[in-house]
Length: 214
Ligand SMILES: [Fe+2]
Ligand SMILES: [Fe+2]
Image (cartoon, rainbow, N blue to C red; front, side, top):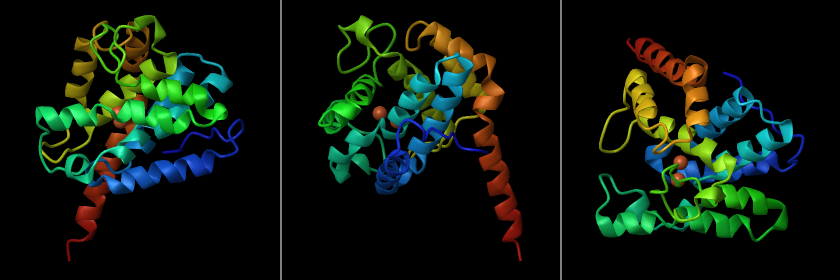
């Protein structure tokens, strides 16, 4: 599939992709996660009818949304299994660390704010600033939906990828609690286009497994 082209506003777009690739390379269990979330976020912005400028900002934020994981120790980030409560508490710092990294440049302050809030929930039960509900940026709400889809549709160290139909009903079930209703409904309306990349990936791995049969 074609990747989003959001170079116009951010000449440093390619550099952003390289930094995001560095994070994906460090975490063996979420390879290409940032790339898939940014592609989905870009599509969702267009389905929502956002301006080109908003779309580009959110696309870049999606590339970098988990960049704060660079500050999480390997023993936790690369743990081959579920995290305990203490480890989970440390992992939950990654949106704040990411925002601190980005906000050192005034040019990236808006993107930093989106990153800071990408784990907020619509009902205020997310982190880190659940009391400031009005303050969840639109980009953070869009990334939250795409991040969840990719987390479910990709394999993890402790479980296989979930079927796309299951992912779809999980998003549907959590409309208005975890997800902004307008954004989640738009994702469901365009579900097949939005999740085409997972079908393509499955087809490719099927082809590869056929090819390697001697
Ligand atoms: Fe995250
Ligand atoms: Fe993520």
